[in-house]
Length: 132
Image (cartoon, rainbow, N blue to C red; front, side, top):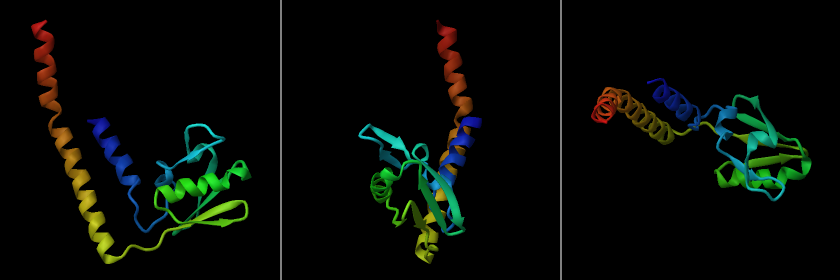
């Protein structure tokens, strides 16, 4: 049950609302030094500039172009400020708020179903081990 709740918490933190949080960039990956995709938080520090924007400061200034590409791929609009990148989060429209409510309800319902199915999976696991 704890795994289902943790999965729901992780999913809810990555939903894009009007408020900027560094968790929104957890899924962003960049091509670091020609290698395979690397998570953004391993090549840059991410902080809140204010309530509606994030500031990404790369550890290596030559990575700015790759970080911008990674952000564009995840539908963020970066603004380069010399050695840092600012990402502005506009406030959601009424239509977007309604979509967010539907998405959160869907995720919550999925978590409820997962928790309800725990006794069923335990019973089926017990049956398979008792037959052996």
